[in-house]
Image (cartoon, rainbow, N blue to C red; front, side, top):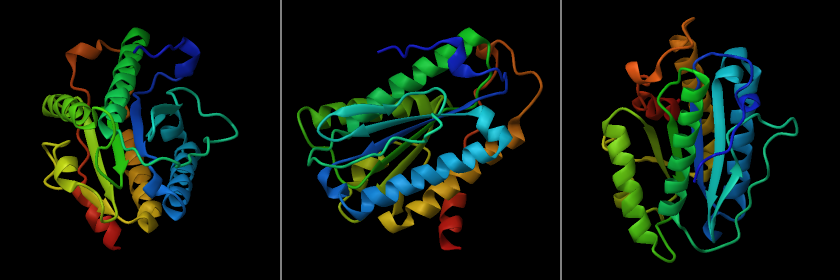
Length: 240
C-alpha cells in the first residue's frame, strides 16, 4: 500500500518533521468510558500540537483503528479545521497485528514523501494502544509479522514504539514483544488517557524544539533519523 500525497500535504515549511501514527483498539471492550476518554485524549493532544507554532508545522499525525477491520481514520496530511473524526468501538475482534502492519506502511510512505520533498525528519513514532489480545482470522500470524517488522525497525533506530496496554485484560507478554528497547509495555487505565496524551504531547514538543535546525533540506540517507525518546520519563510523569 502506498500513501498518495501531493506537495500541498506537506505545507510550506521545510522544518524537520516528526511523523506520529496512532494505532488504536476499537474492539467491543473499549465501548463506553474507555473510547470516550480516548477521543478526549486525542483531541487534547492535537489541540496542544496546533497551539504551538513549532509542533504545528513539524508534527505529522495519522490515526488507524483496528476492530472488525483495520481503518485509516485519518491519513497523514493537514488536520481539518473541524478537528478529529469521532472514533467509535463496536466489535469484539482485535486484529492488532494487521493494524500495526498498516501503520508501518503509512509511516514508510510518509518517509518516502519526505525524501521526495527533501524534508528532514525525526524517527517516526508508532503509538499502539490496546486493551486486549490479538483476535480474529490470522490474528496471531499477523501479530508475529508485526513484531518482527517493529523489532527490525527499532533495532536500526528507524522507529520509536509506544506499546501501551489499557486495563487488566491486555496480553502484556505479546505487547512487550513489540519493543526490544523497552523493558515493559506502558500500562495505563482508561481514566489515565488524559495524562498519557499530555505526556505524548509534551514529548513531541521537546523533540521538535530541541532538534530544530536551519538545514532542513538535506540528503536523508546520510544522517540518522533522530534520537529515541526516553520513555522512562513517562512513569515519573504519571506519578505526579
